[in-house]
Image (tube, rainbow, N blue to C red; front, side, top):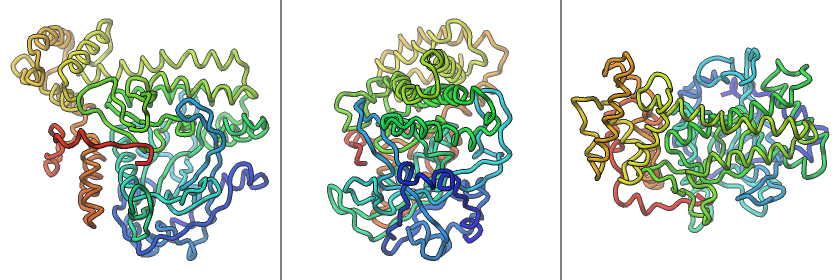
Length: 504
């Protein structure tokens, strides 16, 4: 534990300490009562160079539950603003999260940044933010308690790792702690903390904050910090801000294309929930599709369906336009518009490539998009489960067409299957090799809401076994996991009654 704490750096603090009232605020944590470890992410610990055995130590529990008295930690809360549901909300900020410092990690392995879209050589090491969520109020809590409840903490802990297991850029979660601290929401719940790990917690709204306060110098300072920390090869480039914006646009397009390909609905795509690096950020009222329904709205608070599943690609562009507005002191309108025009084709290229791989096709050809869209239309009309369909399609061939039984209109599926088989016949790939390729990109498990609910109910009764089972399964969701077969089938009827909102 001491080694982990001693490794922390404080680059954000050092960069802006002369302007601390405008970029961040020093904060103090409020420790949880009688804390207990719910789950420790040993896989992530190894990737971060932390001894996994230290995660469950009494010293680590003290830190993860907000008791910093025995450690040299000076946490800070970051300020930002943002558009929420399309409306300017003004100043927001880390209302229930605090950054403990940045952990240096060798630039290798699955945790590492794979490099920017624009050509360049990445740094030999990265700094990853170590953030504690639910450790008490900050100056940005807006009269709230700064706490997180066990229910929402389990959802974030599991979903961040589920997204990573699906190969999608995301924040991660190192540990989850429960306690006897009473937290008051619709009812009294137990307070919890999640140790969130991210390449960065800087958001579109971080830049918006200074733009709308008419502080172009602070916009520039923040952009320079992001470039220096994440893209040091660009520091001396005259077009470094253009490269940064282009990277954000392309990485956001890829991220949302991946969301769509696995049926993930974020639920609250406000500009303050969008990462400048294109990582999935802030897991609240998320939901994975059961039956394929483009109109799916996972957030009970989203009464107008702004953040529905089908709207996510267009909302991504809307948010990037908002970011572009905040960068007008750094880049010309022509430069910003030229990059924004590249978002839609990049999204489509990424989505097409993923979808043809889900169909077992080695290379995109004209007509493949129509083939994919026809299947999705059939799935929507027949209420076919999204994840189960693509997983079972891995075993489809001329001799095995049992997947047709998932469709009410089997004749319509048969007509599509004729075209699909003809397309498969155009490539030199055995059924076995195609099956293996498809199983590597079509998960058997995603974090459906009923699965999270099952883990929550057990944990609230003091049994954390389901949290840890799901963690293991979701970190490798394309494997079979015979110990979790109960989660591989259709969701139970009661799952339809689960409602999540911004308070979840």
